Length: 521
Image 1 (cartoon, rainbow, N blue to C red):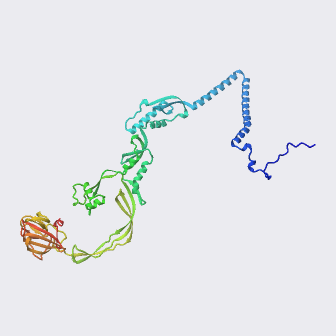
Image 2 (image 1 turned 180 degrees about the horizontal axis):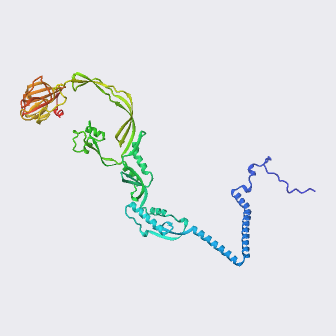
Image 3 (image 1 turned 135 degrees about the vertical axis):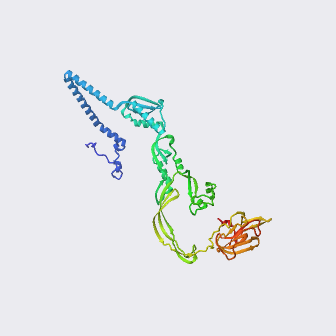
């Protein structure tokens, strides 16, 4: 009889047809590891018995302890048992009260226009905060400021200690709600208020931008000529300004006169050009001024406006400059005193200069030479200097008036004797016999009658200039005489083609007639 099949015989392995072992992926597919949630559920299910046993043990211990306490109380005599129970009740009550007083207290909540601002310890503290805020705002505004009683309400009751705020916090909350005064930064220039902002460092950055055009890699310092202050303080809300508007103001100009003092060698056009003005613009700033009669020391108005801020900057400048040459004189007895002649020309030298230059705006106010390196030495000029005594009759190079009187006819075209003719000089009228003198030193080259000139004197001044003196009544010099400047040479009359006593005065340069008024002082 065949034995029954063993029910625990191993079953046939399921693999591939070739009899190979299943892959590792297949071996990892266990039901309990296929999902994280499934794994968590299995973990909690596995821990539940242990947790249940732990809780049961703790409950059993509490129960045993309580039963022991009750047993001991029952074993005590009745009076002692009552005392113990009373003691426990008082202890529990004290503990509960302590917890209550630690967590809670009475407090006063401040309400402004229906909005709770905070809770302080007492109503007196709340009122003190109100008074402090009113005083602070009054000090900033410059007049008494008082909040309306209808705006504020105080509610006193139970409050958690953790909810209480200090008096300073309540003041800050009240000030923020009122928005009458704000904390910020104010800009002052020479004590004058310019603007305010709540952004810390904004004005410092703005002032730094104003200095930027005056800074370079060679700048030593750049500061404002004016007294500039940024103050941290409380200000009325209406005092706060837009930073862009403040920037425009600081880069603009304000009323203020800028003047220039006329120095030697100045002329109207150069002064105007140096200050970026036209001649007409300079004259409009100085109405009624005679531009041809500038005097050293005159003060001219250059501008009616000055920059709002003036930057005083110190720069280190490097440049090349010419070195002036010296002049050495050699006496020459063949030349007259006052005459000079160059024997050998001088030459300028050159040098590298390092200077510390101070500017106020664009105007230079100081220059200090820090170092000088000579690149080329200057060459001395040699001049001959006359030592021979100068004759009185030698020309000086300038003319004086030949006589006194009134100009009766000017240089140029005029109508006379029924027609138009060119008048080559000026007529100076005075009484008969008035002295006529030499306009400058020279030699008389003509003295006598000459058609329309009448009695005429001509003086050659040896430098291309010849002067004419006509219509004289008598002559005091002859041809070949050497005359000095101011010497009496004739007397006024009306000889020749003349309508009255006068001196006809002409100036000719290399034979060409000139307007005498251009030569007379």
